[in-house]
Image 1: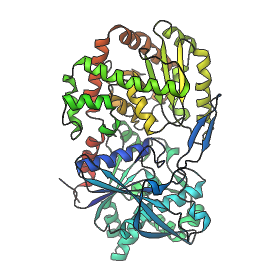
Image 2 (image 1 turned 180 degrees about the vertical axis):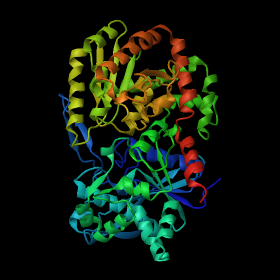
Image 3 (image 1 turned 60 degrees about the vertical axis):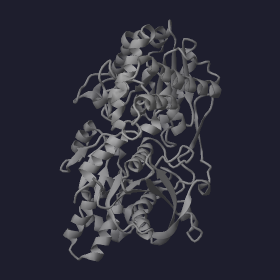
Length: 561
């Protein structure tokens, strides 16, 4: 069943192509995967985001592990087509002209989804306004709020200018786009003087997906700044709508003006309901685009044994019938590509037959990059016989000094672990590198401090390549974990008090899993390890994909009304 009109999908970042710096991490990758699945399924969708002429940043690490940030250098004209329309928004009582660039996502069956990237670098704009869409997650609060006004209000106006008058649903991927509801409300008031009817109409058309279980992670701005940037009249409107009190909280705006709100895993849905009591918050667990995140060796394997997997991700459950040796061979090929990349970059002397663990996440304290390195002596003892290789990657936000310090500690730990444990930190983590790491390691490690992991999708990508996870029971792993079948758990399945567990206790769990289960299995029984990889594909890849996710959005949020 198809929606009655177009679904407009708004996201501050979208990973469209690894060569386009229009994303920072997981949120943007999820957005890109969602749009690709929409094209695969023929869902009438249009994407709206910002252009980000200087991207998030290009990361370089020096010998001590210090992060250095550089602007991304790229030319939109090389990749995108100019859209045949312009619009404008009012920022600080100035008219700011907005143009757009088009990128077309083509699905497996030939259907397309257009994505429009908004750009304020127009010749007739004030010089400071021309820079508003340059940096992803850069600048101060004023810069961020101005960007969110361009995305939300400017995005709705751009769709109208482009002829999208039949949008039936506006999906906000996180709260950055929440001001689109304010523009929709203004449209409704031009049609009817009945404010309550106008509010109901806006709610019926808006969907909001929240991605953070941490109160501090929701965008909030002082009312004085909001009045200066978006205008006093707009702030008064938000106050009368009941979603602006003392501060402008974009999450509150989205919650208040959406008919459907969801967290991104079942556990995150529970946490969101506790953070925002009184709002009916459901859950739709995230996924990844199966074809995009499956390594070439596994894609060929699936083509042979599961011919319809590209059209039907759920059919990956039939991986249970693939011969074990064929699974092992596909992984060996993917691992060889990663090892070659590591050695080419860093001359690290990595070996194909040595157990290799992967950890690639945004570098910030709650992700606990150092947990795997908590007890270096124990780690060296673990590797004394078979050896051990560790691949780290991930960027720290330029203002996150704690995250930067984490990277330094990981890089500086390498010398003390060698030669038994070989450790590398690959800089400038992007989609291309993520594909190599998630497919090429033997075990995916994830150590967030519960309950701060809303979802996490890297382990889902690994699962598409038969890579099991060793992870804290939080986010998606709460649903995907079957001990010894899809991977292993760090810590107990606790709902209350999980955040009170110490790093030492979780590190001990991690080491015991490696010592007692993972290393003996990897070193001692190739067939049982291949069976583990196969069950990871059949049970996790077949479910944790954006095709299933989008079908749930269709059933629960997009259809009807």
